[in-house]
Length: 137
Image 1 (cartoon, rainbow, N blue to C red):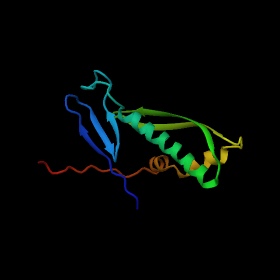
Image 2: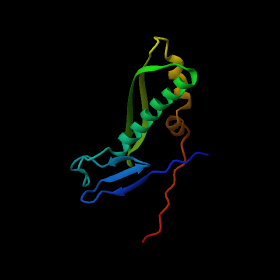
Image 3: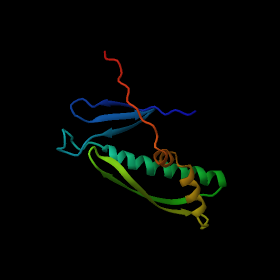
Image 4: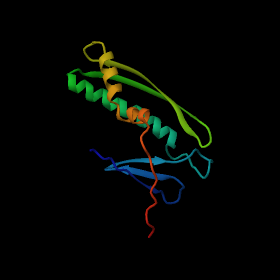
């Protein structure tokens, strides 16, 4: 089993959070003026869409390396629809354009990457999610 752990903490002087994994960071916030947000970073829906698209971009590269095909440009757009109260993601559509450096058809790469995409597969299968309350100081 592979495990991924990220940490988040509040950013002093703001109501935003900073998240990190290893040496990589991201700022999480609400839009300016919404519930104390200052627009300093991505909101949850944007992060979810970035996770879908970012994972897929990585998987395109993994598949290409596995079959020995070099990729030139990748363009991915993720349209995430949210609805309801509480607001939840109700649909995600990923659009991709991928070009190989040798001009070969990239459809096989596109299809294989979608078949193994960790985030998309996790969402389609309904990853169990639970909340644990950590002991206080």
